[in-house]
Structures are given as structure tokens and as C-alpha cells.
Length: 94
Image (tube, rainbow, N blue to C red):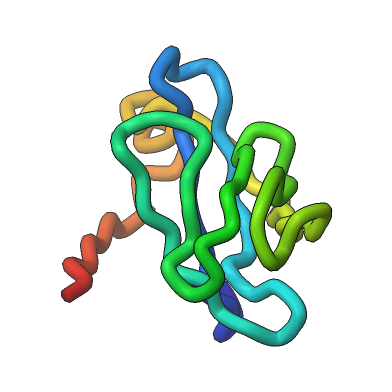
């Protein structure tokens, strides 16, 4: 969550594309499932999503877009060097 906004963090299999996206589309919070690759499907509407392009390709939400969040992508060692006061937290969801 970022400011009470449910988010999805996406890293493609090559590790060269990262996206931080809102999971809220048209007022509905979506839950995404994947078989380990793009595209993914949301459980609520069974729409198929391209997370790199941030758009629904098929299904009830076809043509809908996911809203990106600004973020900084950095390796932990580099971040920790410049921001040693950073705390790392992990939340395990159900």
C-alpha cells in the first residue's frame, strides 16, 4: 500500500523492466494472478493484462489502463550506502 492505495510491483523475467502500479481500476481493487510470465489475469473480471504496457488486452476491462506510481529503482547495496537510515520491512500476505 502507498498512501492507502493498493499497489502491484512488477518485474519482468529479464529483470530490465520494473513497474509500480495501482491495483484500483474504475473504483475496483484487482488481484492479479500469473503463471510466472506476462500477460497476467485479474481474479475479479478475468481480464488479461500486459503489465509492461499497463493495459487490459482482453476481457471486461479491455482497454482500461493501470495507473503508474513514480518510484526509484536501485540496488539495495547502493541505496544502503547513500541512505543507511533506511529500514527494510517485509509483509507476507495471505
